[in-house]
Amino acid sequence: MSDQPGNQLHRIGWNTPEGLDEALIRAVVDEFYARARQDDVIGPVFNRVIDGPDWTAHLATIADFWSSMLLGTGRYGGRPMPKHLAIPELGDAHFMRWLRLFRETVTELCPPDIATLFIERSERVGNSFRMNIAMRRGEDIIIMGPLPREASPVWKPE
Image 1 (tube, rainbow, N blue to C red):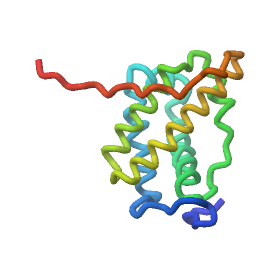
Image 2 (cartoon, helix red, strand yellow; image 1 turned 135 degrees about the vertical axis):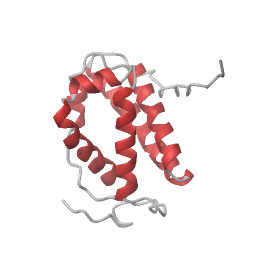
Image 3 (spheres, rainbow, N blue to C red; image 1 turned 135 degrees about the horizontal axis):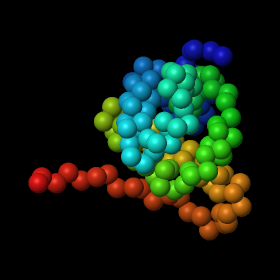
């Protein structure tokens, strides 16, 4: 696999936004998973499924995933669905929280055009995983729409 960013031929239909690079992708991945591991909804799942020493490898794999998706590097060649199918409790609440935390992270760390790209792709991934898991579980996906966005918490002074 190549560490070089992709070119327009790998990403037909769009140009890489200025400022989107490996360092930003890694910063997003590291910050998102730091938050996810502490979250009361998805943290217990991540912390049960990914053993402590395995986090370094997981973060590198996820950075490769986003690099392949957004920069066209082709570094990610994994099969994430079997691992997600092996988590019986994984449901809409988990996907909604994953997407909310991801939106918050990229909105804080990225320029607006890059945040928008990350959000659009993450929502595609989340909805695709959700539908695939539901289908494999024998659920009716014919009328399944996209996940609603989980609202971010609103701070209220006490």
